[in-house]
Length: 156
Image 1 (tube, rainbow, N blue to C red):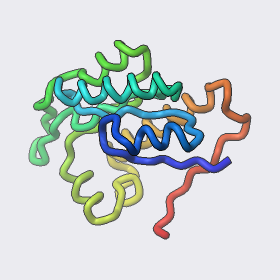
Image 2: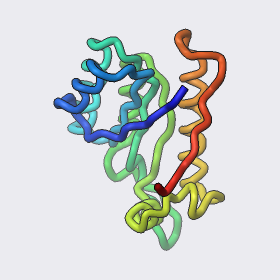
Image 3: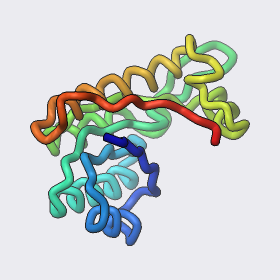
Image 4: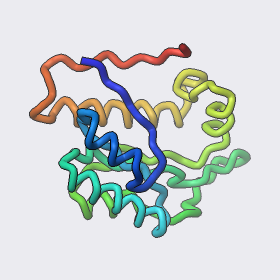
């Protein structure tokens, strides 16, 4: 079995609908920020996936807190627990909460994901935890084969 992760823009546009209709999809992950306006888009995404019978595997809250690069103080500048309330509303799990982090942005822009470039960092640990929870959720689905796929990274 080959597993692909497709990162798409938020919403319910042509890309999402075409994939839902043309490609066998094991599930979707809803990524949102905690702001009310972003949660509206996330709700529309969940509703669309429910209508086309694609399971929502969970919610990831991006930019959940700002972490001061000088002192390490965490502040929920975009709101607090928006992803958790969305997950509760639709009876799905919160897979994780990613901070608004300069290191994540800088390393992503440089083409070096933080999980590769700084695998022992707190941010990498959050990504790894999300991946484990997602893998466990996929494995628990009834329609998944007994062998889990091997997921790797390549710079091809």
